[in-house]
Length: 182
Length: 163
Image (tube, rainbow over all chains, first blue to last red; front, side):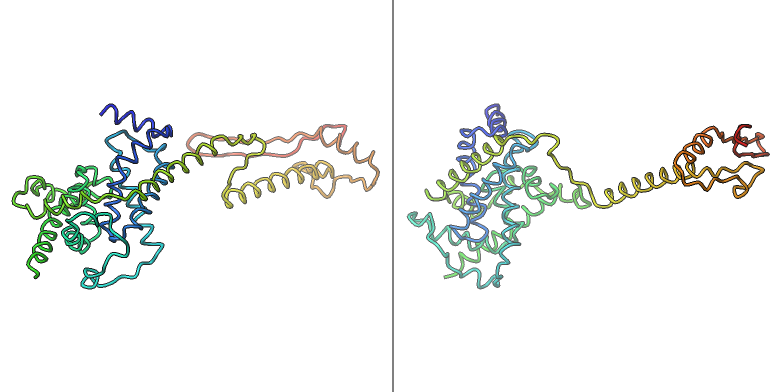
């Protein structure tokens, strides 16, 4: 914990070595956060890089210590996500169609034999509401606490719990439905 | 942040204690295995290095001396300041004019009946101004507690040699 506080202090001072540690710790998390939203591998990597760029500029003025760091990082990621949604005016497709859209680029897990299973999970999770999806990802994939999620997504703790409860049952229903498909 | 529903929602079971969700646990486990490629990792490091360099460059820039710094003032504030300055200048100008013209009225003597010098000579005007400076203004008010103002008197007192 003390080393984490030291890391945050060094990040605020702009120490390059601290940023390398910081990138190693959060790059996979940020990539997953963006990738699960649109399943675009290249875009997810670009958004992760953009988030890091923004964090370099804003971290010196961050309030709090190591405990607030994950929430701060994901709050920044969410702002990048929202900005992209505003800027690019995405063309929305019905969920039925979205479920069968193929990935535009090569997937990093292509070499892994589990690719089909990952695809099926992604197909299910992409059908969830954006907020519910973010809450579930931060809670169960990134192991953030409920309080950290509340700060990162700017919502009350009670709402986070409610989203987790509802999201789990929704996701389970979607996954079961997919398993039943031939 | 608290909402009306917080009381009810906080009673929900802790998400970690919900049992029997092997399907979900497996799904989340698969998502955890997603990793960025080497290209993505390099991109992150490049971006961070560039940003840090830019920040360092910005810190090295020479500071601007105080007389060359600018401040942003909202238009209404600037307009108000200009108006106040204009009013102050105008009132000062008017005072000067009154002194220069020497049209000073006593309580018993109207301004028009004062002797005026129509000379355009500078010397005459200066003399007039010096005389006008000797004039004193007085104001007397009498108040009674609980009643209010009883008497009010004001005017200009002109020394004998000026009359």
